Length: 491
Image 1 (cartoon, one colour):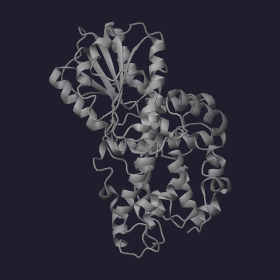
Image 2 (spheres, rainbow, N blue to C red):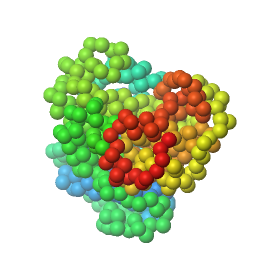
Image 3 (spheres, rainbow, N blue to C red):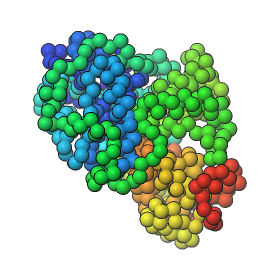
Image 4 (tube, helix red, strand yellow):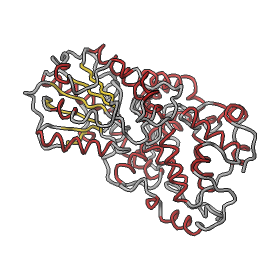
């Protein structure tokens, strides 16, 4: 069963098994495998012998809505439709063609639901969406539960905001051994036999865009409500995400710790967009790594001191990857869940605020506008190459993402402006933007989860400093620059 620590009731009404079906409102964990929320809905469906309805929507006016993001989500919706059809489960998709087109649809579907199960996700606009749904369903007397399916550790299991990766890692090392046996069922729809919802299409006729072409995406070019951020070649959805995961684990995991920082080696997992959109889950990825390593919980180390190495009892490469997947990724979920001002400049550690303020009036050798940054029009060839990768692919090499942010800080009129630029470009262009993990990375640039570094420097003060020249010396970049770069001068 789904652990109680992952379940949160948002309405006071009790489930009503006398109604027609159980409904899973899919918003953040957009997959049919290793999905705690879907598992919870299936449990209720089987318990009450009621059919299951999976309802997945795509709004027209979410922040940063674009062709790029829409296409990635639509890829996943097609996968989910196919998986539900194979399992004999009713799947209803609604893709808005104009803002507000789906208003009232959730409530209309919920009126005949024994229980509505949704996704508990602490970032982007989804908390507000869940709250609005709760108010509607409360008035209707419908039970709404939301389920945390984001990581290995339930983000509401502790109220504390962790200020360093070390302290969070130490906490995880104490708590995770008791939770690793509670991973989600891999295929919750397997052997599902509760049938489809009768008369579903009659219920929604006139309220939903039932055009079969809505999920194909051919209409995106003419969708005037979307930002004209070009689509990318990366295919979304759980099928693609699981394939990326398997290829990484089989072919690149063994060299991850030694090669991941070198752009020429292409050693990164490529999983971040799929994790962000819920097309794969952290538990599923962890399971693939464990299978490759021949690992089981008996290999956990006895030391619980927050060390990055040795706790998991895996190879050095696997431990390095799992630390990124679990510690660093879920550290961001902890902040978004328990720190309301997590995206505000003022939420930085006091030492970082103080040192950046002390150097706020330092002269800048180069200052660029948002438009110049966006167009990759700086004097720095390496920075421009990283920005071009973001524009073209919706992704950026992880190490270069750190350098990208540090130079925006150096080339902006002030640190507050640098934060605005980083958030805007990341949220607009990155497939994994708008995510708790990407927020963590951006704020790390300005000192969150870090410590003061000497010597004190202009503009940065004691915030960690990075240069393109040093990055060139440390990393293998020849092929990367040949692909994304143009001749220029680094700094």
